[in-house]
Length: 514
Image 1 (tube, helix red, strand yellow):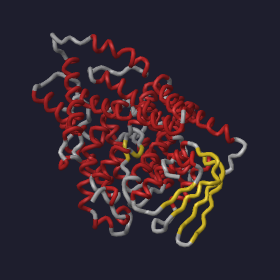
Image 2 (cartoon, one colour):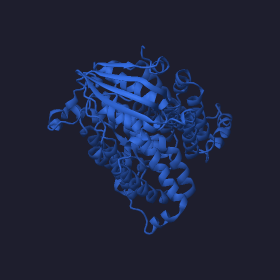
Image 3 (cartoon, one colour):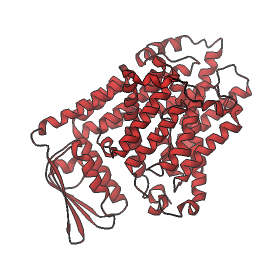
Image 4 (tube, helix red, strand yellow):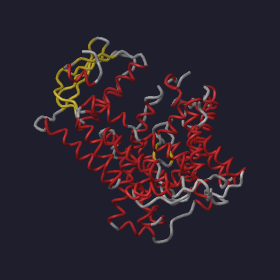
């Protein structure tokens, strides 16, 4: 059975725990193998010790896995926050991260209680994908230096400026630590890329990142290479360190509050967008976005108490979870237990992993985030404005900082409302015509009314035919169009009857026949 064909009962019915335990058990091992190198690699990219990423992975599994509003989503440290954490730790020190995460987690809990989950879904896809592409680019140019056993510079511009010097400093006729580290990093990257091309179907779930790290570690250990290796404490208990006394007094500083708001906002947006993507992968229980926000808030609050990395719902681990056949939230919980057990019993294994190998994993991970196909799609389907939003967000994330890029992207998104500013009214009417549910949309379908529209769409019965009438819609922005297109595709994929009528220009953006 494919992931998309999982029964609806699989992710939420009482009794599902015992009924689907075997599938959850095997899926949890796959997710664990995917998560281990990423937890450590993202910690290193964030400028913190690797065990801090492992602590976040453990909390994301054991705690958030039980509380999550998206049963098949897996939470842990995410590349999307690596840049903002790196800059924060660089400027304020690691000890200041804990209090900020406690406040960020509390903000997420409050947002969930206030039922603000739907608000994050109205963020322009151009902003989100531009942000992720910018983060990916920063990860690539930062981890490039790790491949040479060197430390990244303080910002993206400096990292780019130093890239030629790393290459020019190589001495192919006098192999030293730098050259050996680069070879191990390239071995990791090459293994990952080759595996993606040639992996047999029976081993398709075996992660390339794990194979790449294993290959580099085996070579470094077998030949006794003198390269930097990751530093993991002999006891994971040492990583669960409580904040220093009086450290919470730093939250009276305005810059700390701004950082907490930024982390809470970006973590929530990435989590809920990941949850929406996971929903498209299976037919089980849909995400409760407000419950997911509250769960993430609890997780980040605990990460703050233990001075670990912030967490989000992570699409790489979540998609691996679904594809591996997970049926309930127990898979995510078990993957956290495997991480805890591994680092508690076998820390000496992790201490053999070369830093350059994790740098190679993150170079590939970051490169995958830099997807130009999305901006090309935005331009072809919706014109220059969404493409401009994507580009501005991307460029500012790379050249300035993450928060500036996102805020400018959001500000540019509001410009899409200018042509309709005199008539932004939007209404969604629902009625029954025989056995068919008729949805009549009227007015300007923009991100302002997206939460209301999404709520109506998700409450529709899957057993009744649906007619979406857009005849009285005079404008539709790309955010609403993207959401509606995905909803239509998902409904049709499941074989549920749906008909769409309306003006030809709007139907064209939805890729629907008139």
